[in-house]
Length: 118
Length: 105
Image (cartoon, rainbow over all chains, first blue to last red; front, side, top):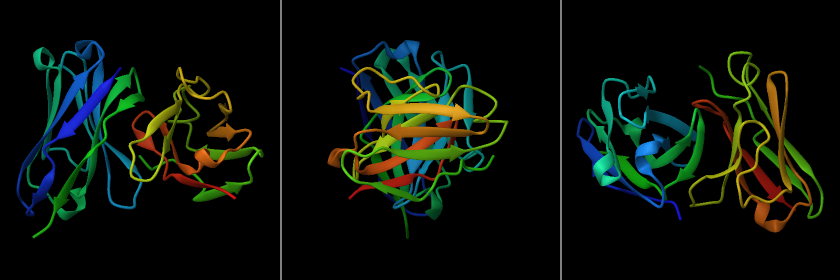
């Protein structure tokens, strides 16, 4: 069965960096677009970033553009999110999700919590 | 792009039907047949319930159905059950609705 497992979350100071990982199994990872979606405590869902199956096409939400970098390693069945210049408003549970092209977030991981606080 | 508009809360009794609306614009909901619905129980990850307006993924109960008229999409849950109590989110491309809390009375 499809499994997505995020890791790398934690407590970081404003201005700091963190790298999230998402390990995929149970499907042909290299065939699928992937995405990161976040949810601030008690709030709704917010799309963060999107990467094509080959990694050649990437999109970001305006709120993270220039600070976050999405990438993938198809040989390792892994998705990544490098987060720099973190702000308090980046505090959220970050989910990775497989994408049923073009826009359906088909399978979700359990999420990893990122807390940005001094 | 603004978030899609959903009611903050809806409620219904077991066995009843409820409908949750999701209003966008002609640039998102109204312009394409790409609307999805997600169910999220407290402390859990979202789960895909409906995609491309009215398609149900394998394993999702046929009590869940989706439709669209103009710039508004709708999720209908028939035969309400206690386990349906959750938050529901619509999305069109990368835009999410604000979420609707469903309470089963």
